[in-house]
Length: 314
Image 1: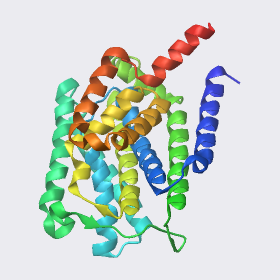
Image 2: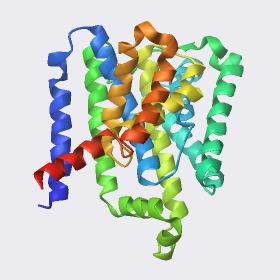
Image 3: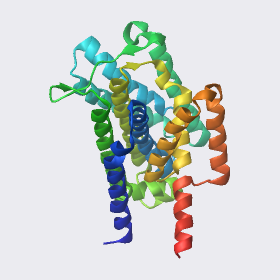
Image 4: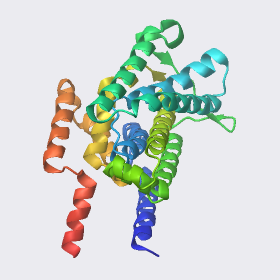
C-alpha cells in the first residue's frame, strides 16, 4: 500500500476516532452546540478549500449558497408543503443549478476580477433575502421546523452531533478521494497554470465549473442542516462577513489541505465563544488572524506543522 494511501486512510481513521470520542468530552448543551456548528462549518470549508486551495478559484460569496440552502429548508416546507428532507435535497439541487449558471460567466474571470464577481453574487443573495419580506420574512428572518428522518423529528444535541459528524466524515472521505483521483490532479494542474493545463489536454473550464458547483452544493446542504438545527434563519447568513469568516477558516487551516479545512473551522468556530466579552472586536481579531497567518504561516497551520514534522523525522 502506498504511503499516500496510508496517510489518507490514517487521516480518516483519526477523524472517525475523534468524532466517536467527542461525546466523552462534551459536558453540556453549549459544548455540543459549538461542536455541531464547527462540524457544519467544516463541511462548507472542505468544499470551499477544493475551490480555492485545489483549483485556485477565489470565492467571497459562498455564504450566499449557505443561506440559500437554509432558506430552502425554511420556505419549501412552510409555503409549499415539502417534506423537510425533500426540501433539503431540492435546495441543494437548486443551488447546484444556480451555481452552474453563475459559474459559466464568472469563472472566465481571474484574480481580483473573480473575487469581485463572487462578492457581488453574495451581496445580491443577501439583498434579495432581506427585501423579499413576503417570502423570506425580510430582516426578521423565518422560523424553521424540525428535520424529520424516518418519520421521527431529529431533536436533542446528541442526535444532531451524530448526524453532523457522520456527514462530516462522508464529506471528508469524498473530498480525499476526489483530490487523489484524476479529477484532483486536473484541479491541481489548473491551479498551477491554466495555460499549461490546457496544453496538456485538461478541459480547464469544465473542471473549474465542476468544483464550483460541488462547493456550492456542500454549502447549501450545511446551510439547510444549520437552519433546522438552529430553528431560525436570517439574511445575516448570506452576509459578506460570513463569507470572509469561511475564507479565513480555509486560509488558517491550510489551503489545499482537507485536514486544514476541519482544523480551521473548529478553531474559528471556537474563537468567538472565547471572545464573548469582546464581541465588538470580533472582526478585528479575525482580520488580525488572517494577516498573521498569511505572514507567519503562508501555507496554513496544518501544512506548516506537517512540513516541520517531516523535517524532524528526516
